[in-house]
Image (cartoon, rainbow, N blue to C red):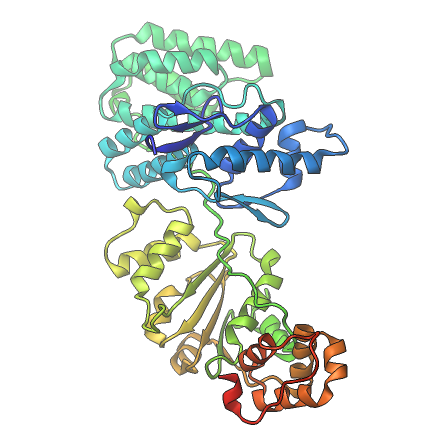
Length: 497
């Protein structure tokens, strides 16, 4: 490896490995790559990618051409070890990236941390973070990608918001003379942005350039009237009035710190693959639908309990995958036992959840209470599904429950988690063995209906000796060749162990 890998989209789309540029293809491949990076760690539909490449006039072969572009990107990225970064995920593709692997993700993390610092009153730290974020920009994004004009405008607006917030903080720190040139350039480039105008006027006034500040206002008024037929807004007029009267309050005007516009929060899609084929459990699926429904009387949290290997995880994943459209802000998943069966520390699970939700690791508190507070604040007013698998006890689960009533929680456990039902109003759903008809259905899906019809006695024996345990039934089916003559005979349950 020649150096750190980074995909850069805050300017011309590039992939760098240290000082070396990695060629990723032509304009189509760059458009697909930029779209996947913009929504990194989220599924981007093929239709979105088609729009990014061709705009509103795609060819009939657009879908197959997008697939070709993705294939070429995978080959190009394999050179720098990112060949597995792009996954196929219905209805499109998902690119998995960490903060350090893309300048847009780095910018997003830095501006979010700056917002937190500014809110906490640490202006120096906020400015340092914003300056680091703004230094990532290398020009106007996507100038050679006509299908991405909307995305280019959005990124440009995000940069201007961060720059204006940085300027406001620096004015409050008394650095007005240091940012005059930068603000003048912004106003020249974006003459309709009243916030930047106000900042320039205030910086000019505090630098002893009162006449320039008044001229800046007159220029703003002329541009606004000529271009959109409106007078300047009330805040700009108020500042102009203060300057005309040399108001003593100008030394502290304005005091408020506008929050940094945070980029979209990451949408976690953590559900593992379902266990297929799946059979039966219609009654239990209906119970989950009712308990986790969107109406106010729904429990919102379900404890799916039962003996080990009875199919709790398979059922939970079956329901969760079928309900993904109900949770536009994503799905979080955690296995609460490690490979040795020991409980996974709740603090470790919260670290993973917060990172999946887009929180930079530097912003995650060290103490458990701080992590819980940040987790619940991050998921507030979002529609998320949280699936907690194989919980050991209530103490492990409680800190992982969102505070928002918009979220839904599905917990699987060998224990009934009585206190969660009593104190949190969770609904308990006990899962038992498969019913006889369900066992037969699963066996038919595993081995084929023709095998079950040809070997009815062996089929009955497998169903009987598995006792409705789907794992035992799967093990028995895995040891059979459906095309071979009947040689399987069951004499004891140890045949499935």
